[in-house]
Length: 70
Figure 1 (cartoon, rainbow, N blue to C red):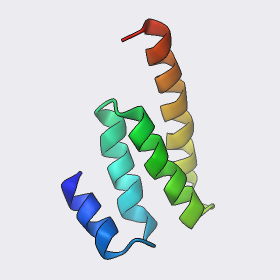
Figure 2: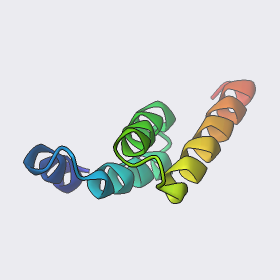
Figure 3: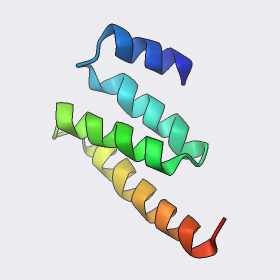
């Protein structure tokens, strides 16, 4: 996460580090933070299909987590 954050600080208009950091955050269960990164990717590049898919999955998983209350 720190490496991707450093890359973002270096090139804030490059969508790939946001996407990669979002994936790491998603895998850590930090869905809200991951969704923020995926949304930023789509803001920078609306054609980034993997980011759209990842955002949708993070939303679903966040909802499922809330249903289970953990």
